[in-house]
Length: 267
Image (cartoon, rainbow, N blue to C red; front, side, top):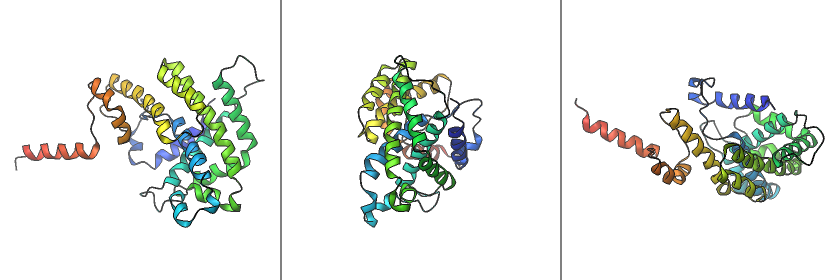
């Protein structure tokens, strides 16, 4: 389906990034990672860490990481989880507009998971839409503030949704592997489907497989530079070296460049 709600939300998020205005998305897509992985990560953390931690009984110290960030220049784990989870809700909202027709025995697991995600979204729509609307309007708010009103009454619906999103995300990864001829990605999607306790570390291999595919595409199309979290760079380092692709940690690279400039600078 056309992901109009998700695309509009991503455009809104990108407006808050300084260099986003310099990107012409009609010419190329600068995103190294697929947004489904962000949504899947938000759902996994919300279910397996935040909800499993019983936020209603959390001490002030334990709840603090899940709360809003002070400014847009600050980082909050709870704000990131809320953002990624809300994007997953936008995806489900778009999928809910798709007419899948009656269930049939020949449809793929990917299609059946999308059908189930649509049904889940419609069943929990009031709660999910409220979560979306509140988060979309507040770049600072975290998952704690989004769930704590009314004594955390929305947690059951949110947990229910994260399970449907997990299955959809896993089958999406599997289908992506099939469509691109990537057996590793296909196997990771199959494995992820059965791993409801997935952590960020469990999700990283599939995320990095997509990153690696996009890095190869960037090299092929003459991109000057791509960026990623340093943990991902470290994990991909053997492949990068084998392919002869230069890579460095940003701070170390800038220090090296500054040293080279200083050595050759003639006042």
